[in-house]
Image (tube, rainbow, N blue to C red; front, side, top):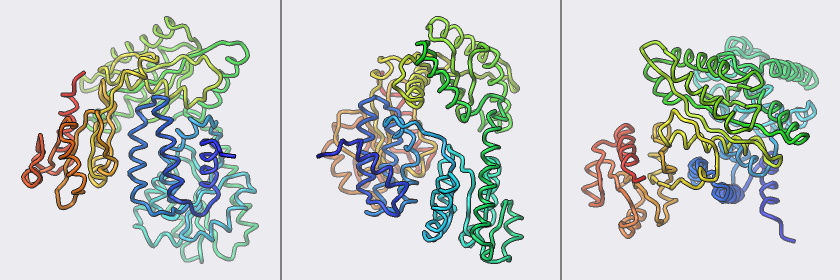
Length: 493
């Protein structure tokens, strides 16, 4: 009997938590399935994320370690769970950092007996890049990792974990490192002579303390709004009411416009002040029965205890107007873009409803910001695709600076290897010829009429290839990003 595709997906996700190694073809299958689902459901703004993960996967070997596979899909894991309809129960995670898998194997069954799920990471770099949306209840680090990293890297990591209230434990070899561990800020140090039974008791105390702190910290300290830990039980409470009485409600996402530019211009301290004051203004504008949650960064989520469109529009317009009228230092003003959706069915997850509100928010951004958009079928179907193809190396350099939004186009970045002839508008960023894929350039020449724009990164590239519409004059992040922005601005509506 043939398995359904989702059965295989569940098997792959299970292997990710249990298997020491995983064939890369399993991950390729997972990503192909997910991209198909994203397109079918028209969550088009997620395509860029999956394209980036696919590009990262191409450079990996045929067989992946568990840590490699876990790190690879970390950016898309929650979307996979959303589409599978898996409620992402909050797990008690314990990260185990060690160069040796045998160390992980030794602790894994014991950590599981404490009611937590162990995750194996092999380097401090993996720990830094780990998706901390689910904050671990403890991190155990093998002292042997220290020699591979600078002292300031370890201190920076410890500082980050302290802000998340994560207990840090060093698995040591002797008392030589004990003082250094406590100086760095670690909470516990296990020398080799400490018996396993005592280690587990101490780990259990750390986990229990972290659980208590986690339950207590439901309010975002900076803004005074509730944090994401409060969101899941609150959403469940509203959904239970919907199931019992049919009373629907509304989820709205609010994003402060040009917040990164604000931070870069006036500094992060000023940005923090803006976040605090905007949160206070939202709280004053919504009703006492509504819930305000800091969703992440400069983004807030509001659960409105009403679904009537006229009432929702009135409340959200009051939010938008009050924020627009606020005054700040430097004669500066702030606006917000808002997207919302009516929650009226019981068969969808929190992630799916937030994705609908997020889709509407993206449209508000594309349409010029400082506006309110209600999610509808029209929001999903009105976007066109615009591709920007470049080398994986160049994308890695530019990823944080590349423009991601456009009022009418979904901008998707992809590597040379993912190039296929299509009817979509596209920019092709041509690297220096000696460091690029010559076969790809041959394909570009053959399909010259299919592309909207071809950018040579330098005059030297343009002269050698004889194939370009524009030249950036300098192979720099700023020059290339500016050319891409100019091209996007010229795209027809």
